[in-house]
Image (cartoon, rainbow, N blue to C red; front, side, top):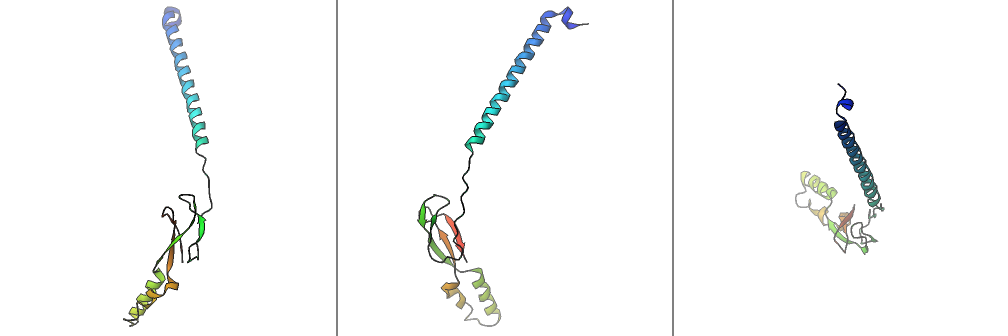
Length: 126
């Protein structure tokens, strides 16, 4: 049985519906392409070099990677892991009262550099 010969109205409905589906599919594809182009264009990132504070125990001028301001960093000293290891070795060797001596040597401290504007951690000098 041939549908086209027996039922011309059904064949017309079938072709008409297929045209609608094709048109809707093409519109959806075009919209998706436009949206993907917009998303790709709007996601441009600026890559900046990370500021270097390696080895600096005093505040330094640099651009903060968080607030993008040129600031003088705040430094926060703390006891380094190396100092704690020396304390432990001295304690094991029997220097009970002298073992905390390395904790009081400021030249051995590690210094954290923080942004003076927003408080963002920038780096550490060891």
